[in-house]
Length: 217
Image (tube, rainbow, N blue to C red):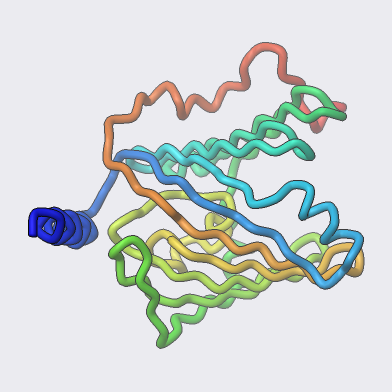
């Protein structure tokens, strides 16, 4: 009986938490890549499932991802300033950074069609709404299927290009694209959300010492 009461209490706490809008904390997201190209899939299998950690506060976010092939990648976005800083510690290229101002360009957003679907998906107690979008940039066509919640409003590299056409933050997302003749599918799902205080220092848009500007290489 005690175990049942604890389980009910935990379930209720998750349900209550899911209704609350969160402006500061961290999320953990699992990502998996797959393709019908056997050679590329072999490389994806070597990488395995990836896990990213994202800190967020107000209009800023900081995502951290690490794997043997790409090395350590940190992406910092300030939606209010419309700027992004990407730091890469790559095994082949060393420590490099990319600083992009005017991250969301109105002319790009106007070319993108975002459609609100009629499906919903439950993720971590949140009822998420379906959105689909098709993006063509630099010769690459990308199709996105997203399930978002408006309880979180976190800027991300994947969804920033959609501007204000997307409502909320995707807790589940599938990105489909073709690169170098291979059809690639990237599935991302948030597995944990924690409400906590986050230091503003994590969102500094100044590249640390030892990092070189990739555009000047």
